[in-house]
Length: 599
Image (cartoon, rainbow, N blue to C red; front, side, top):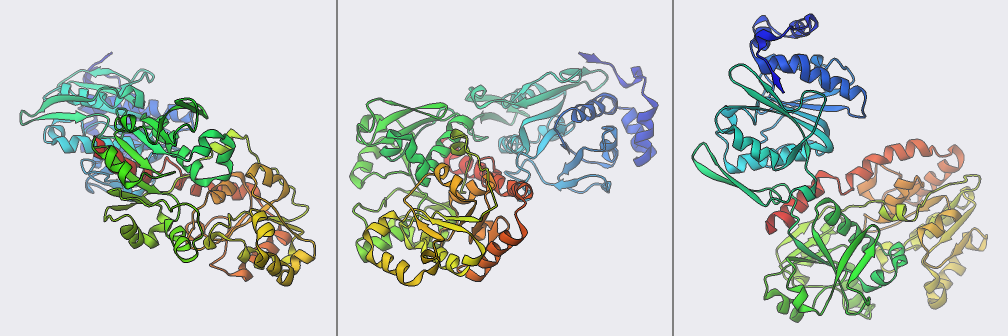
């Protein structure tokens, strides 16, 4: 589509009025004398404004802000849009009705992350920066990569990238580069328009390519005759469909899907596998003990994963990277596999320090605690306090703190819902009681103190203690009056689906183990959660340490003042997003520590 020069345009009077309210006469004349600016004022911005009115879109980012851009939001003719500007430096006063002004250099890696703008924008307008030869022809290879990485990170997966390319200089190479990550999409009549006049411009409306569409490994072209720009289109942005990734998982999870519902670590492994496969299009394999299944494929949720036996060194050597999570290899096994340059990463999702301590002091475990000598070790943020222990036990200085994630895929797989009846206050305690830092005795003491404010309580995961521990039975009989009053029962380990119909409040306790899936399950389902996790102190009903008085206060308030579940769930969305796989910090970590290293 050809759009003529400015002298052919019958410019609406309303456009001149909009521009004149915030711009000087000189800036208004600048808009009049350039075909691209006229197109923006009369076609681009008004069309985007109308589109936002008929969609759920709310946020727009405009890149490159000078004094003549001060009326850009007004040209949208849609006051509901949250309008953001971005530039390297402050060039003019910013109108009060803009949502924010971001000062960042997109040619620098992750330049926006401190402001938490990951996947924030429904639309990004780039009319005069990357496609302007004055800028692009001075970009290095790294500058190009960083610029596009930042655009991709800020733009929602469903967002639109409005791009203008000046048809002079290295314009074809710039266009080819952008098209490596984006694909054109039809958008009213403003996509793929050639603007007449001198210079000539070409406009595009792009959407992100899917991971599967990013099949081209590299493209090479000259930048200003100075160097060859050879870009790994997948590795540079975090997509790498060529990687063969192996993840160790406990065989019982592969044998029986129900095992997931009582095992946080296996849930975590599958959540990661789903992200790597669905979002990054990696070739994910599960590594299990030999003959865990009589098949070489594992079908779970909506995916099929190849299985590799843990002693099949020939197949293991074909992998690029192995994440040791569910199980670990022996030193001898690892040496056998390492001959093929397989990269090993030990990702500790549990507290190996606590398990090792119990094993050393009390010989508490029949099997060896999963340590390894992998060059790289990743640990969850709530175990950073024992980072020095991992240095010793894994004999490495290469230890990274990997963001913790949770997704509701297992709740959705069960169609699990919480339908509470608050006529009676029924409290559940769901600590695993495998280690001292997640045990039920503090919650039992809190409930004994608060017994006048609730009707029933159930302590789960304790049948083994009732059956085998004389000390536990004696403690309950001698000390716990709430049990003798008939308000407390002791139950075996059960799934959340079995527990929820019997309770309407969860009381949790932990020491140095402050991120657990039960927290996020409660926040997602709208279950009142009384907890002591400092990571979530702004969510649920928080108490510090072992502050039983605060727990009693929370229970009493629930009894006397009721529970606004709708407001509670709305507030929790922020926490759920922060710990989801869509969090930019998690994506950045995976991109920089898993994918980039492979690329």
